[in-house]
Amino acid sequence: GLILLSSFHLLPESLPKERRQPKFSPYNLLHSVCFLMRRRDFLCWAVPEALGFSAFFVWIATSSYILQGFYGISVATFGLLYCLCFLGATAGSFATSIVRGRLKLSPHSTYTLGLTLQSLCALTLGLLSFTPLFHQPSPLSEVVLQSVITIYIFGRALCMVQAQVQSLEPFPTRAASAAGLMGALRSGGVATVSALSGQMLRNGDDSPGGPSRAICVLALLAHGAYALLRPRIPKPPACVSEAVRAAGDSASMIEPAESEMTEEA
Image (tube, one colour):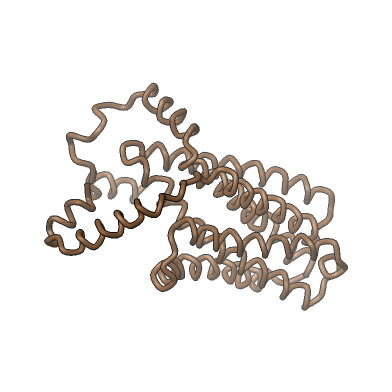
């Protein structure tokens, strides 16, 4: 309540008055949602994010049963191990700028890198779920599970940062609708996964086998959805590439103020 009150009074609207909507309109909101659901440059981020985050939430929903029930660790130790996973998320978010800056990767390439990392981890979990390692509690099993999950969350963070920015960038007049729809798809996936995880645990099996297979399926579906929905940009002819390169060389000689105005436009 305090945060809501302070943001209402202290956090101003950044959009200029002339670009603001005069009033809330359910029709405009529905129109924006329908418009976004037809755009591949939105869906290619929103759908994989909903699936990939749902896979992550399988671990959130089942980790206490797995670690305390199957491996028999204490509540305090569980808290430390739970924090360890989110250190992977923090490291992944921090590493995004380093990856983009030093490797000179585009947002799509960075997202593909994160997807590949999380898919490899998910596939590892899926394969291990059919071995005795994930059906007989042992220190080795616990270390392997925690390590793979932490790396998965690192890759998930790489993806999340890119998706949150790139899903809004093409739609400056519908940014709020895009953010809301992306959050709704993600929340819908999380709610569904939570219910299914509860059903899985009701059978009395608190081993990591079932959740690992669920993570594997959802992560691979996320990777497949991105590959399917990503817009295909045709490669320009050589003459066009030369013209673009020449234009870039000319743009580098423009005065800073004019260059910034062009970039903003």
